[in-house]
Length: 143
Image (cartoon, rainbow, N blue to C red):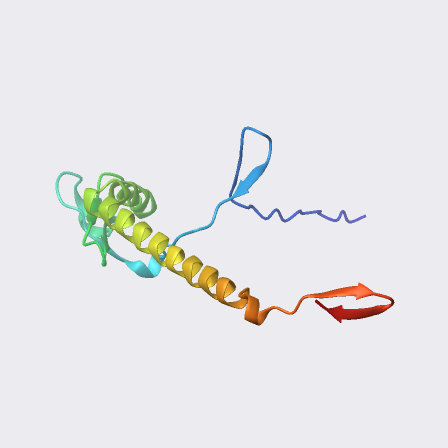
């Protein structure tokens, strides 16, 4: 008898719970993907002998827009060095500054969009654009 494996897909939503128990959804201002980075593998230097000279386990990651660079060659595994290099890149002052600039640009553009929407709504709600009717004696009558 074959057993069916049940799997549940859980979609995670970024949210935070406020003090009153209500949740507040977070919006992503921007995203950083693998395309934004240049990842280079190279042969490490220093002690380690023949094995280290043959394998390309050292990693250099360059974030093109900010100019931040991080390297790691301390582990034997390229995967582990990549993780370490990304952690170093995220803590780089150039990258942190770039994130702050990008976030402020995104927030500013969202503010501008909200202002435009508010202006449009205000224009549409002017008296000359409104038609007010009441239901009187089974018919709609303009006031």
